[in-house]
Image 1 (cartoon, rainbow, N blue to C red):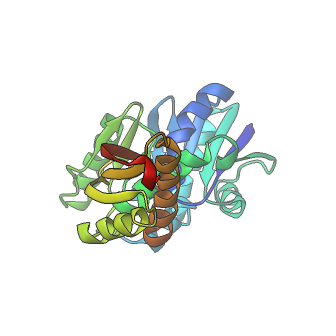
Image 2: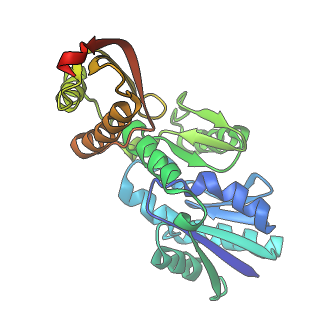
Length: 273
């Protein structure tokens, strides 16, 4: 069996990239967060994303529990795979999964940075850290089936309405993912105003609009006062760069887009230019 390993820190989009990578390399099955996925279906295991604490989730992901590891080992033996993809946060984690499942030692390691642009990784981190969304690379019907089985065995209502389907994967909100980050509107407005008024050409910031629901996006409308004939694009581009730096530094959030709306331009007389 040829084993591939996709590794990268938590929240960098490994699970969402796994399907495309598997298609491209002709990989038969994926091991991700405690489950064995074969041809888009969960064959064995239990997802770590449904554990109640991070410690339990880590143990589930590295197949710490003997019954869990035995179930997946037996499924692997039945499938007789030629190629397998293992997902993990580090090479060390991949090795622990190998040991727990008794898999061959030779592995072709692939870092998430080598297949995913830095901007997409940053966006994936934002979604994880602010919205608590985790991806499972199997269709929603498979997740529902797994949840139903857990409901029968535990006699607990654990079906969550917070799921969104994205192609061949499912977004879930684990109980251990914590709360959301909330930023007061006035804080963001003040950051924009302080940044904008560093430019003597900007005389008024009319409105600041933002959206953090999908990806962080910022829109600013303003008025300029410039001499006749002076181009405005260099000023607006410089403001975009400054806003990106300030929002990233102050809020630890890199905006996906910063749109500047120029509502009006006041032209200075030639003698004041």
